[in-house]
Image 1 (cartoon, rainbow, N blue to C red):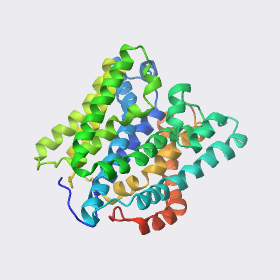
Image 2 (cartoon, rainbow, N blue to C red):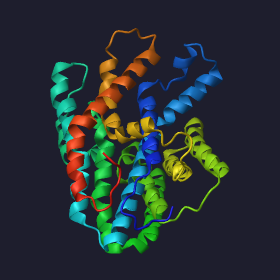
Image 3 (cartoon, rainbow, N blue to C red):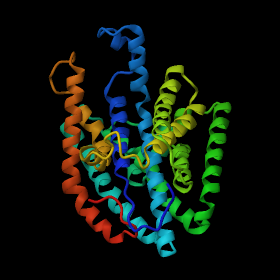
Image 4 (cartoon, one colour):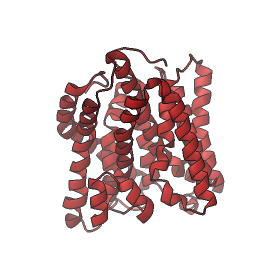
Length: 361
């Protein structure tokens, strides 16, 4: 989709895609990834293996979040450059802070400070985790120490995105829009080579996956934002979407090494995005789905805490579907209330710094 000088940039279908990205992560965290679990509940072996592959691939939803963020941020910044002739860095950082920080720090307070003393089954936040959360470096801390069990540690991905938000506008400001295609390709190739080098050097992928190497989907999102997408038929859209959904499942089922899994997953997310951009069918502009996408930040932030709390509601361990459905409903309710009463006041203030109007509040 060619970039224009329009003063508004909003694609409701991408809000719907955000919700499905969250739903994949929710499934990953709420359902078992062990084949015997499903066999014990009556599924044949092949069906149990398929179920495990589908559940296990849910982590890719985080990469889809990364790609969508970079695509949208780059699109907005390029439009700003074209419309007013420059990028207002100060306004950009105010917008990002007003969008991310209120819920981010509120959740750290709730999950890291208030909840652990009240609920013994919620692990306390360790000192080094608290420092990393407050400095937006939790992704690096998790890369070298492992991800802690306190629900606030789900914010590692927000730390990585904040580092992207801090760096990328400066790159555009100094390099200019015309160089973004070359820069994004260079970053992609560099990240792939570094990841392969880590593999041959024997560096555990668990140490690298939460770090800046997860910028692969972000670099690809930038590339899609600056390269015009030609008109594509419905058949090609469906083919790209199915391929984007199938490749991560194939990687998971076949046990492909993470050195190649992450680039493939980034490419799969790119295929999904290209298949969706400009698409008005498949109910992707349904107001319910777009609303759920609008509150997807809260859905992602709260879901681990809600899963932990719902796991201690006595409804019978033999009813995981009911328990997970309850957790999903509570997560949606919590995110909706959070969006209304915590995020919206800051979003209204954020609009005062907008140079290109985006999603309506």
